[in-house]
Image (tube, rainbow, N blue to C red; front, side):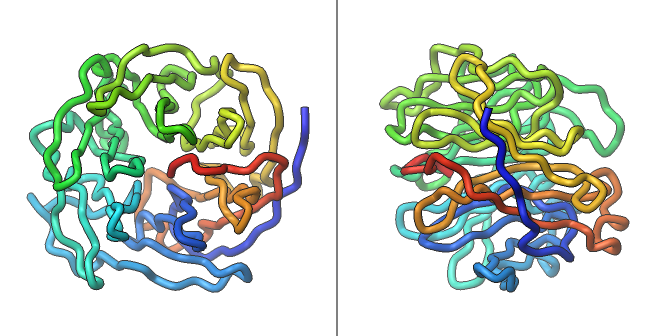
Length: 298
């Protein structure tokens, strides 16, 4: 098993999530501060969009989570408790897809394919209210915003991190409350079939990403590590993050000019918005790894 050393790139955020590399730039969700942040190679932060002043639908708490880009370059952002996908255009965020009639619980991560089709995961229950985990499906959002339930995904237990393979034929997701990574075949119509086990895990997973060899990097928030699994479950590599400094390892993504830099989002106080905001201990770490992300998404 390969092992890699991570270094801290930046700190001072709330709960960080959903690291992304797009068009030569790294960004992530500063969830409880309601922002999407871009970081330079030296860790300087720039706010891409701040939703603090947004008037929330149904009086919901605004929490930014998964992001993705449409083919025309516009940014999509999931608003977790509003249950909507927002599109950012000229610095303004508007509703792109209203998922309130489809989402059983707070929406979460997202991957957008090269054609502009988005796949949105959801918890299926309200973690912050102490509800019990429940199965819930992936939601498909077509270019233009029309949304539907992905047939055959209703049994997923807390689909969380989500990614699409380099050739666009396979979707993988971390089933947080089943301790596994699962895979689907992606049809020409966007439907998901051929549900199968990608890797059985030994604890709860959070975010993940794929690399050009078809392996998955999976973040484990409880043990403070990110582990690379082959399709089938073989452990290939690992990055350890010092938990005393970083807290929980929430998600990971491959970026950099050659997409061989593994960015890791870390945070404290996931269940207390205000403590997480005030503490400002959320951070981004990075490690150089051996295999590129290639053209995988996100």
